[in-house]
Image (cartoon, rainbow, N blue to C red; front, side):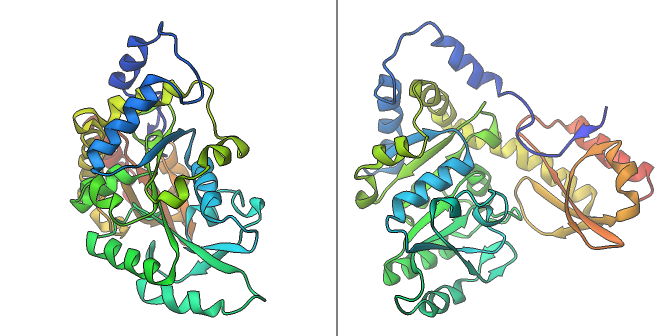
Length: 337
């Protein structure tokens, strides 16, 4: 069987997370996030961040992006700014735009927003014949696995303050960014209005924890959550998982495992690496005529067809082993790539 590097959500869940669910499997809770576990999770996050925030566990990244951004974009003429490669633009089937909000394209440097172009793009939307930019969306880590530096996040946040824009951080792979970037969740909370911590891609059966920092956005959020189909009846399930995820910084331990395996891949396949990053996504430029044979030994995503060459993506997960990495490296060697 081919070794699987196609994505980082190809197993059911990390054992420690499952054990936490089993521990409370017979417990009876009230529903819709009004339970003790949801309260304890919120208190836990408040303590970690050192500020009063609201937390909600949602099913996955797309619904979290849609609901979070809809809370920011209240009027139908309000729009969000994002790079062309942004997940909300490319990989979410127009989910946000189906709610009536335009995505304004920003110039990018790799997968990051070109900070120099934020204000200039904002000023292009100058009157009521155009949509009104109301929010800026960034991913950390980016779609190309890059991590924003803390100074970059500060600069972006200061620009959004000046322009009276909300800043939303897609954190589907935020734990990976924290490990690579050398900063903390508390740092993130200081430089945005809303972010989420991804669990789906890091050992949880499902779930993203949305954190609302800006008091304006907390108001009536539960209405938006229900209206946009995001409210879980069994809210305590997500809360139990994220309490264990955050306990003793376990989520960072899982992210470090991924990074270690990805670093091994990058070192062994350095001659093929085309997009440089330090997280768990490894992008390689290989000959297109080798893809079929390689795919029989290694599962991967074809990221870009360049004709004679192709860019493929290998992704490590918390469950990736050294033996799997060595098997992948051996496959490249065997095929003479």
